[in-house]
Image (tube, rainbow, N blue to C red):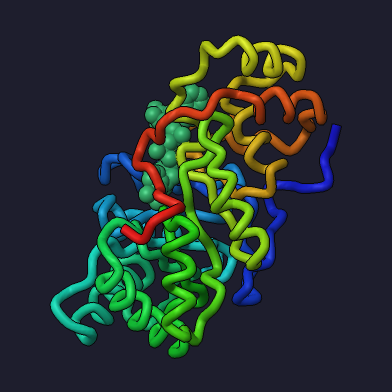
Length: 284
Ligand SMILES: NC(=O)c1ccc[n+]([C@@H]2O[C@H](COP(=O)([O-])OP(=O)(O)OC[C@H]3O[C@@H](n4cnc5c(N)ncnc54)[C@H](OP(=O)(O)O)[C@@H]3O)[C@@H](O)[C@H]2O)c1
């Protein structure tokens, strides 16, 4: 059964740019494998790759896009900056380093995110203000955040920022961590939501509810989790360095989870984050 979306479908960001509905994550992809895995993903049809300065494989992502023969504008590339440098100009350069590493001196990135709110209010502001400059100059088509709770988003808004809302908030999201408060806030303010760890790092592959739903649709548990994310309106970023799984994770547009399936997954007990908890209540 075909669904209304395909691997090439996009969501419109507040910046006006189009974000492909499925991304390819490369955290923990060893740099000697990243180019090969990204090339495999691009061959299968992914058009969206998610890296970060912290992952140590930005150049390898750029190399894959170059080797793929695809036009630059046909691939959506995201990176992330974790901490600012000593001052504004060096923080600007630190952001620009990602652009240079991935697409070269004259290129642009589709999206740069502040990797984590937990670095503190001043560092966040410092990075955001420099990212705004690069956005104005066209080096970053969109700018956004990751691991931001409601308080962090409100703090960002209080700068009187030129760019509001942030295009994206990237969060750990799956049935066992639905982060409903920050999701509601993002939906209300037109902030697109990206789901990291959408496969719960394969830790729920024995879960009976998930297995029953997978069996019913003749799909894998990973495919059900990606489909869950897509149907929630999130943009999942599954990671794999295995060619079979890279293809499998993209093959999620020929079935639909029913209302009952979604409700069963929504009803899963909420558990601590795998990566880190986002504090939605307080500032730090
Ligand atoms: N913003 C942030 O703070 C943040 C934090 C974490 C992650 N992220 C982003 O989100 C992406 C995804 O998160 P993640 O990598 O932590 O977790 P994930 O995508 O939920 O899980 C990846 C793990 O699942 C395995 N896997 C992949 N496909 C599978 C399948 N079909 N069946 C069984 N196992 C499968 C992978 O192993 P193989 O490689 O061997 O297939 C890998 O060990 C990251 O790569 C990164 O881009 C962002």
